[in-house]
Image 1 (cartoon, rainbow, N blue to C red):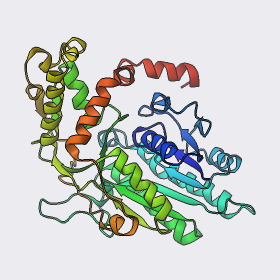
Image 2: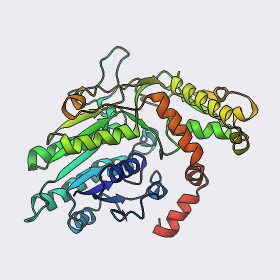
Image 3: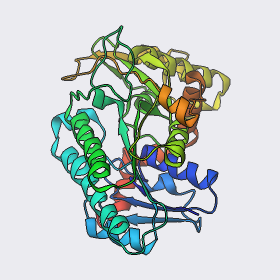
Image 4: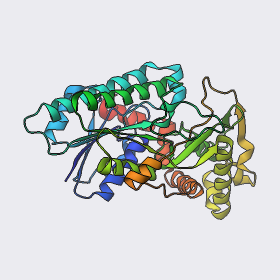
Length: 367
């Protein structure tokens, strides 16, 4: 049986990973440590809060003493570090939070793991620190450049990606300097349930339902490699169980789309769902398809953001060969599943938009 500490487990990918691990590895204990900042959402974990193999702790990964206490108290043998500030726009306007969480927070976790696992006279038998990173550390690709591999030189172009690159280097250094058993995965853009509404796909879904503009940066031709979050969780599972100590693994979707094509796909998918379910017209009367119009009419082009990378793409060949990883969810299928989740879980995102969730957190956790 494994005892796993999932940092950032109330966030988008972290929450999906918690659900995945408890389902796929019954009997393992999962402890979530999360500061529940603006993008963290405890309601994303409501389905597992009564599971006896699950526990939530409200806390900051920069609190090294707390992390070390949790490692000892629960005999943790695996750390999966999702905790990160991740929105590029926010990193441009306020980089300090990214430096603190992504760099100092990662170093705090590494130090706690070193203290407990390497200095202890009775550490768990097998210990692994898995660090979740991003393809953005590699910089930007030209239209004809081959996708990123694990040996692509780092060239981060935003405060966000620079902070993640620094954290990746720290993880590598703790392996080579201290012998800490670590693995790192660099993923492409994720989408799916529980994603905070500021991100492209949920933002488009929710704005369509409210009849609000769909803002597209620049000419809309920026390209990303998209990965359904369930496929990402499965890839991380494979890295944790089969990856080589000190290894870095790219987890991608082999699924490049321009931003404008993604928005058009989301628009078409929402329109189709409205046509097949007339009840949606009553639930979302301001949405264009509720009155027979098309969601694409909401598309609005806005000024590009500073330093906007043109293209990202992941080559997951190493993960395929060494771990048996394959993305399984076709993009059109994943988008339909995602749109359907947001339609069926309106309370989850409406509480975020209305501020109800933030008020609840303030009451219960003094935040």
